[in-house]
Image (cartoon, rainbow, N blue to C red; front, top):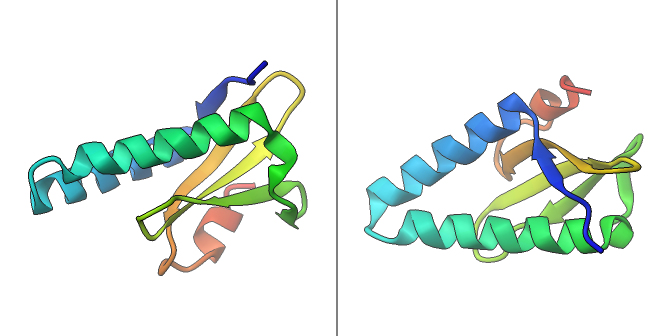
Length: 98
């Protein structure tokens, strides 16, 4: 059984912004990005502890084929996504959210 994956508002905004960026670059690329992120969410929901903690109780999952990582916290009844984060950004930005 998979846990539901819930995005914080900042993570949802990052996800939407990345989709808009990729969709504007080439037709269909935004959808490919969304599909890869969804696969990552599905993997995390099915096995939240697949990735080791990297900072306190926060874990990091890489998104295949795109330079993004999902930073998340596994809770009892859900997965809380802290950030959908481009790998070149300053990590202190997402750390400031916890």
